[in-house]
Length: 148
Image (cartoon, rainbow, N blue to C red):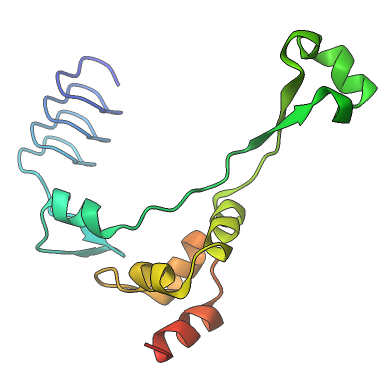
């Protein structure tokens, strides 16, 4: 954003940090003219956690990026023409557009049951919302929850 004195703001005239709205003095606000820092939400429900506690609960997951390295030997003639730097670098990065659902499902498939359960044990867990955002099938979520 512009005219911000905090960090990581996408809005305007914020003095806090991590704001997406405008004219906020608090941190992590998405509205306008907010002075207080809101409590973190999980699945659209407010928690009594601090932001540090909330951040600590969300497991790390390595989401695949939308590109992959292609070695010169595997490049098509058209790619070699479009990317002449392959002669120096030995290849190029091929764009692979992938949406969040597809990327999350690839990463999810590599998790063991314990790691998956950390996601399902997040505060206010909502299987339907999790499915909508990540693409993880509801049947798998239910199966994991029943086998706790």
